[in-house]
Length: 410
Image 1 (spheres, rainbow, N blue to C red):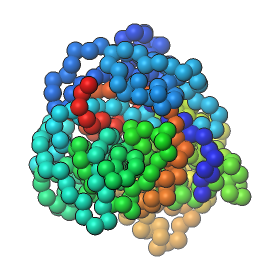
Image 2 (tube, one colour; image 1 turned 135 degrees about the horizontal axis):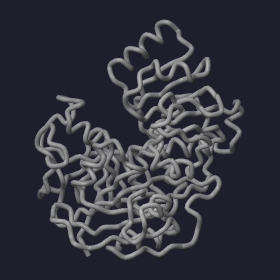
Image 3 (tube, rainbow, N blue to C red; image 1 turned 90 degrees about the horizontal axis):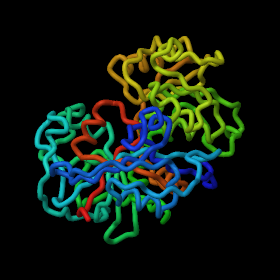
Image 4 (cartoon, one colour; image 1 turned 120 degrees about the vertical axis):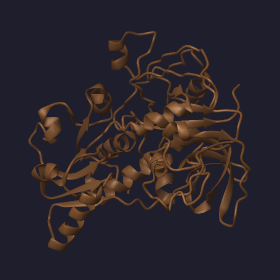
């Protein structure tokens, strides 16, 4: 179990170029480039503002979300302190005026999203009514649109996506929730199962909370599945310190997994692109492998360590790529399993293989969301348009998390 006395810090980290700095400086800094755009309308002509990763208090977060082209205040605190956790790197996209975003058929990508008026949903027994503030965009959202679960999900159209939610309940205090697989988060009003809704502490904003239900919980479950003890005191729960590999470590799930493993006292090796190497190192990774290097391509630890546990968030790596770098009883938890991966996992179970590939199937627990939410604070954000956000998620090259902000433009 993760210790509740951890002090995690949300650092909205963006490697985007800021117009007020050179590219070299921007790539070396944690930046916040907030762009005020209306969801479903033409982009505004505001400029960009840039700030370093000092805006850590809830007040600073509010200023970042509300500003348009002006720099947010910085508190002067370090972006990453020892034993801290940068919970997410969301890019915030405003949803103003209308009620919901939906699509009416499989496929279509970002351009298939439509901004429409919809009836306010009525909660059923066991559900809570929600006046939305924030929702995260996750890979599962656009994978459903692409038909990965056809014809079961979506099982009817039009469909409102959005499975990860940070929100205010009309009959409850502020809550975060998972609406998987039903979606509905990209709207001004939604409903959620009470059993899948958790109450974060006051200092956690809706945007911060929206990053947790899908990505952070997935990282937590993946590490547990891989046999990584998460007691938070660095002892590994009495077990020997494990060598953990996290692939695609700068993404939504990956950057949570790096920090959770590190905070649990494990040795962490991470893979990412060259532009995100500094970001991932700042999250606490002991070793960072860049994809383009021979070591990165082969996932070989510079220290020669073999991995006891792998949280595999990337695509396109067959089992044969992991087998040489695993310890004798090493486990690879695959977040993106294909047919070949599932077949490999089944074969290994039949043959009682010590080295194992485990496709991840996440079972959401309210307690996990409460645990993660209880330890978050601070943050900065980068803004843009909702079409841009959906399309960016589909590229598989997002640093941190993407969230959509609901409400009227001020």
